[in-house]
Image (cartoon, rainbow over all chains, first blue to last red; front, side):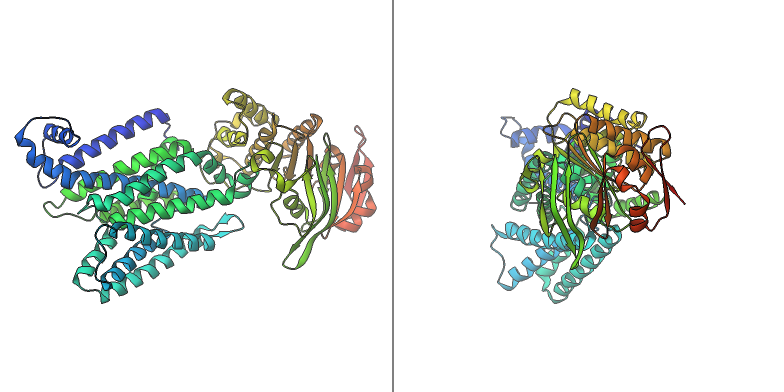
Length: 345
Length: 255
């Protein structure tokens, strides 16, 4: 069932796809920029002395709108995909996904609490708001990961049924509280809350980007170092322990990475589901389950997939824009059903 | 070399293991026998540090088990659980390769070890197969190869704890795998193996420990333990015991 592709070939293909996605994301939109203009304006933004007054508009669109949005898409995609891999390793089950087990909803609830509390205090300070939001989303995600993990694991085994049902319950609970906030909220708060439930890269700004980029670098830097330990963990917790892995510590690190990653992604872009499920699955199908390949390849593939989805979301109803969460759910839910059907045969 | 002294384990306020003393000496295989629920797996869990003991101590190469770092311990002690759950599509050789995690012997040496371990359990032909497509017995052999690979070229006295390694195997492979374990012991390894088949125990073990309700009932050579009286008392089974016509070890026949 494996479509064998050498890891090196896979990385080359994924890097090309990622570059293509970046270019599309920078060039396409309400105002289409020609390829060369995108390149030249991009170089000018980086400080290269490139002449041309015709570039001013391109530079403005690129620097203020499309570049932060593209970076946001890359980081959200990479972080969500890695959180998915970490979660599947933690539960030792390929069906675990931050969205399905309620972690994303928990993070959204954390963010919503921050917004509502902030609004009742007369608005959060502009410079700290994204950090505060990320922190609250992190706390919400951590709480739900902990609860679902406690419920879903017994004697070192994962009960997938309980894990998914606990996820349903946590999602419903978080949804009801967010719903209550929505019902009670004033117009301004309402807009922000709705945004969290749909998920979008629209309105990306550097202020919103920084906490996510920080987490992204942390998670990308950390998880691959634990790739071999993660492989051993898939054998079983006691098996990993007998291979000399400090299992409790590894699990703690994984939970932290998941909560940080999902928290930061949700705080920056709202609920974008199924990336953590689809991406690692496709990567494993192509390259096998070895985490030394799966982790970096999922980061690349997640970043590319999210950018492509965002370009699609921008163009399909232009000049209006579809929230990207709708696009990923539209692709992801059937994929999940497909995995369930395939798992049965 | 592994020594357990006065091991006791409580579960839900009950004694599930009481006063077990045993020594796993280099070159020897200790077989643990007993009816279902007699505490065999509990004993193995307590020996491997997996279960909390209420009393007693376990030492590995003259040092308390808990004092070893995970990696150091993994180089001299390997444990095969009764069943393993792996739900990701690793190839067989990738599964075995995980056993080399505690070592830094290098890629080439590891490849030799992986090959030799698979050969030892007659599974070299499985090496490129997807683990998930293997049968129960094939998986069991792969995991035995994995623990053998974990101890190959390690330090100190090598100790292997096996929980029913032959439960899913066909008759031929019951013998090939226990023969591999025997060869491991003959190279100086110490082995504890939980078995249900009394005749396999008679053939491959140097010592036997018979457990009843968490307590040691009898321990000694196969000739001593595999006698009609203790087997009747512990298993409630009427048996005839005769010497094996060619090998001389006891042969247990149900009446």
